[in-house]
Amino acid sequence: MQSIYEKYQLKHVINASGRMTMLGVSTPAPDVVERVAYGLTNYFEIKDLVNKTGEFIAQLLDIEDAVVVSCASAGIAQAVAAVIVKDDEDLLLNLHSSDKPVPREIILPKGHNVNFGAPVDTMVTLGGGKVIEAGFANECSAAQLAAKITPQTAAILYIKSHHTVQKSMLTVSDAVSVAREHQLPLIVDAAAEEDLTTYYRAGADLVIYSGAKAIEGPTSGLVLGKKTYVEWVKRQSLGIGRAMKVGKEGILGLTLAIEHYLTATKETGAEMANRMDKFVCDLNTIPAISAQIVWDAAGRDIARTEISFDEKQIGKTTYQIMSELKQGDTAIYFREYKANEGKAEVDVRSVSNEQLDVISERIRLLVKGM
Ligand SMILES: *Cc1c(COP(=O)(O)O)cnc(C)c1O
Image 1 (spheres, helix red, strand yellow):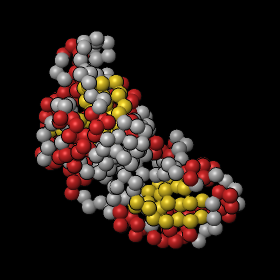
Image 2 (image 1 turned 120 degrees about the vertical axis):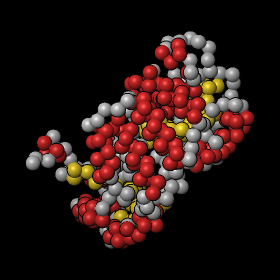
Image 3 (image 1 turned 90 degrees about the vertical axis):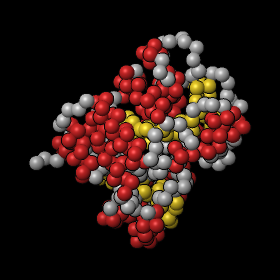
Image 4 (image 1 turned 30 degrees about the vertical axis):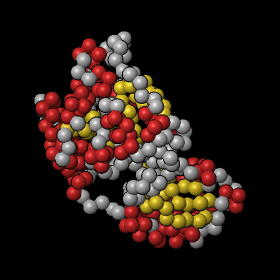
C-alpha cells in the first residue's frame, strides 16, 4: 500500500520539539487509538456520555467534576463564558450581543498574557470576556492582582506555563487567596502541565488541560473543577461550545488516556538525561558545536539537550541552521525559543535512540559544509 506520506507528498518528521501543535502534538497509545475507533463506530446518548465520563474522570482524580472539551483553548473560552453566563438562559444564547450588565472582566497577570500558539486574549474574548492585565511585564504580586478587582470582575485567570514570565510572579496559591478574599472564581490554564490535581487542590475553581500534550490522548481538552462551574461549562455546548464541539471519539479516547496516564510509569527526567548521554558526547565532537543537558524552565521533570552553535565559525545563524534541518525527506524540529541566543533544545520525549543518531549525523553534515 502506498503510504500516506507518499500519497499526499508529506514529509517525515523527527519531533525533537516536544508537544507541538504544529507537528501533531503526540501519538496516543494503541489502546487509546482503539478506543477512539470504538467511539467513532458507535452511537451514544451524548449528554449521558459527557456526564458519565466526567464523573468517571472525577472519581479517578478524586475531584468534584470534569468535562472533556475539544482542546485547551476551547476550555479557556468556555470557562470564561461559563463564569460570565452562569445559568442565565438568555446570556447563553446571546453571549456576545447581550447588553445585560453582568461582570465580564477577566483579570490576569500581564506576564501571563502570552501567545501559546494563539493569544490567551483571543480565547478570553471568544468567551465573551475582556482581559484586564495586572502588574507589569516582569512582575505581578497578589496585591497588584487584587488592585484590578472591581464590580465588573468576572474571574481571575492564571496561566501556569513555560510560556509565561516566571520571575516575580505570584503563585497559584496566592491567586487562590485573592480570589477567595473577593469571592471570585479562579480559572487556571495548565494546558501543558503534568499534574492533574495540584491546582485543583490548591483551590482553583476550574483547571484546564490539553488532552494531547502530557496526557497523550487524542486531540481534546479537559476542564475539571468545582461541580457548579463544570456544569456551567457543560451548558456552553448550547452556546459558543457548539463551534468547538468535541466528538464521541475524543471523549472516550481522552477518558481512557487519563486512566492510563495515572498509572503509567513515564520516562523521568533522569532517564531522559541518561538516554541523551551518548548524543551529547557525539555532538561535542563536532566542531563549532557544544551540547549540554538542561532542565525544563517551568520546573517539570523534563531534561533536554541544549545545543549551542558558534554562528561566526559556522557562518550561519541558528535560525538558518534550524531551517536547513527541516529540508530534505525528513524534517527535524527542535525547540527554537532560544535561537536568538544561538541555541536550540532537543526534547527526546518523542524521539527514539536511532533518531538521536540521525540528528547528530545531520548536524555533523551541516557543519562539515561550513
Ligand atoms: C498548548 C497550550 C494551550 C492550548 O492547548 P490546545 O489544546 O492546543 O488548545 C493553552 N495554553 C497553554 C499555556 C498551552 O501551552
